[in-house]
Image (cartoon, rainbow, N blue to C red; front, side, top):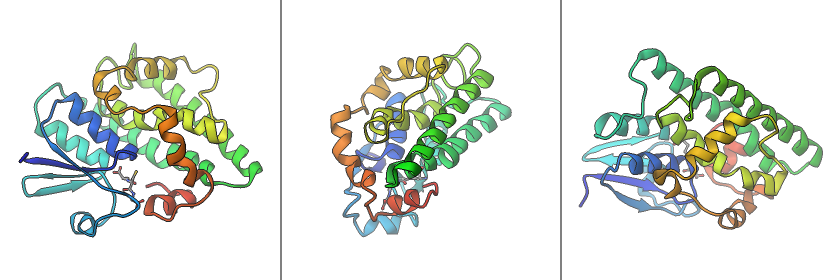
Length: 233
Ligand SMILES: N[C@@H](CCC(=O)N[C@@H](CS)C(=O)NCC(=O)O)C(=O)O
């Protein structure tokens, strides 16, 4: 039995972040897949959040994808996925925090929203958010091609699962990468085929039925409740 266990759900983009890091660093582990619509009682014994991903490393238990991923990066070998300097680390954390707390709530509220006028306002706001990310890349990426420069890192792993879902957001609400975002486009083109990332990807057809509940404004899980109200997860 592996010393490291990931509690995960294939559909979960936050758990996907951790699967990318595990793949990137080739960390041996076992995965326990749970059904988010019928969560096992033992999940609440592991994490007060009731959310995946969770890791168990020996007798150490940790949750929250950004924190889990920093722990994995620091605890296992392989190329570091965090900047070595304090400023770089601070920027990395800010990028993920901004993405999670500012862009994602808008996009998921847009999905849950049933009023077409509100949907359009949220779509426009999400599109502005993508333009902001493009400008941000211009400030911190240098020559790239990754989010923070020449190395694939934790921001790449954190952002990718949600931008992989852009075609889902387009399918349900018409959100696309706006014109004039060459850095984001190049980033997507570079990151998507990377082995650790591609191993976690799905086709649009796989996502569409899974997002139908959100897009029809339903869903009563913890994530649905948070996103429906415009909060972060
Ligand atoms: N901030 C958390 C969010 C994790 C999260 O929301 N996971 C969702 C699945 S994508 C979950 O487990 N939701 C439980 C539920 O909806 O009941 C993280 O980054 O790990």
